[in-house]
Length: 499
Image 1 (tube, rainbow, N blue to C red):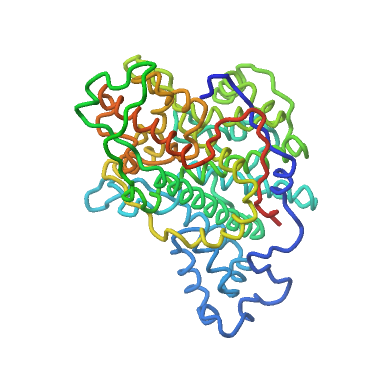
Image 2: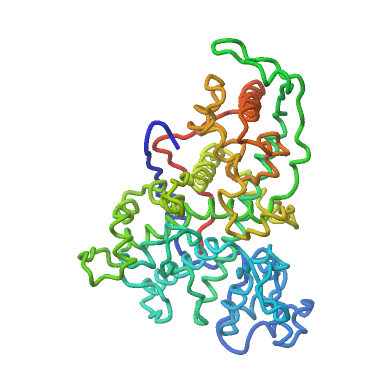
């Protein structure tokens, strides 16, 4: 966190405008037919999916692995797209099947829950909550614009409801509330909105992988300097003295493997947060589609709602003030302050570091936004498989998304082994955002040379302080721009308007 204190990240009006529903036709997925028999029976005769009976079509759709595959299939086959658009209830069913994630499955023979053999299927619970929240917000917005009732939209009519007030809290923490985004999509969910959600998911995935490949390439361009084990035990870097010379360096080629499922989920959540914030702000604050009159705190209120209002009273005001970072800060603080033994837990800051890293990257790449749009197709096709997870990560399941296997994320901010190395100050200023260290699993960080297996040892901490300081020096020698947190950032998303 910044030593200068709390600072608010605001969204530009152009970004908010690009998150709105647009009545114009969607160019990504074929539009639904108007009347008459389903147009999937009138599609291109060369489309092989045209020959499938309805039950075979559904069998194919319900066994797709991810939203990216669904997007590609809809673009390649008008028959598939038109079937989704014209068959009541099938699109929400396909979406729910794709995003569903199971840490454990029930073994009927053993009569117990066992680890899921396909752990990488679906998305993390917070990611699916974000997706459904966007659907319900767009649905409310569209029904109000067209004066059409949406009785099956579960969104409450007031923002002062635990389902809305908890939108900036992680579902994997101690808080147990009825998240709106946990409600499965009803059969009547408009296919138009789901088409645009799939398109957005593909864009988010492309930006996440563009970030991944750019930052990993940057890490590889700065080979980490090491120092001998003998020298590390001595006072090798006296205060005020010169920085010692590294005896060898390594090029972290072994770290250049596809992102793991956990790393991709961290990236996608960080890219989704500014988008969800903007849509929520427009629906609640600009269009006033939800009531914002605060209720009187009294024993009649549900206990969870009353606790949320008491502990997080500024949620709505942060939304009105366009304070992006302040709004999402509770997402990083979802563990009780003390553990079962009464010991104070370390504050979890990984999600905030990840969000600030993404904002830094977006700010630094504004000039290259046009080039990035052209490269988006490339990043929707890269990395067809995930990197391997460690057995410990699979054992802990999606609960290891944050904190458990990321000791390197906050190393710089807590580096006290060599105070005059400048690593801690650089970490607090966000100068390591450039390298994406807030997202990487410990295995990748070890391949990069930025963590060790015994990071609690003083000698290891001194070694790491030397390596991290060398990364800053090498990047400056190569002319790599290093920028950290900025107060009053304003950035613009290049995501196309969602029809």
